[in-house]
Amino acid sequence: MPTYDYICGACSHTWELFQSIKASPVRKCPECGKMKAKRQIGTGAGVIFKGSGFYQTDYRSDSYKKGAEAAKKSESTTSDSWTKSESKAESKPSSSESSKKSD
Image 1 (cartoon, helix red, strand yellow):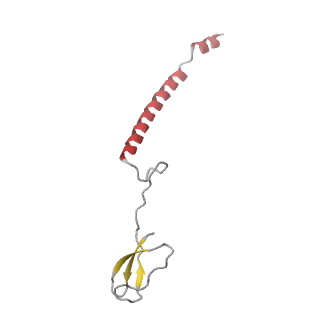
Image 2: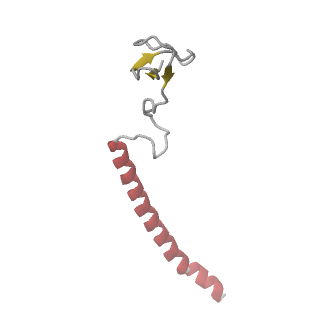
């Protein structure tokens, strides 16, 4: 159940009230007793996502971020070396290919 902030329009008294989402807003001020109370629109509590499967912009621990960076770096160096070796192999025809062309 959430905590709501209220303010009285008559006496400017502010208070918090812990009530169900389904409950209707309180209208009576506990300080002056007038029916001028209004529920304030607030930011509410922050949501913290825990566990795997969330987006990069969600809350992650520092250890996770460091591990992800290390994995990304090792992945990019591995893919760079693989690409270079593949391009070298493609640019030089093998000895069997050159003998086939001469036949």
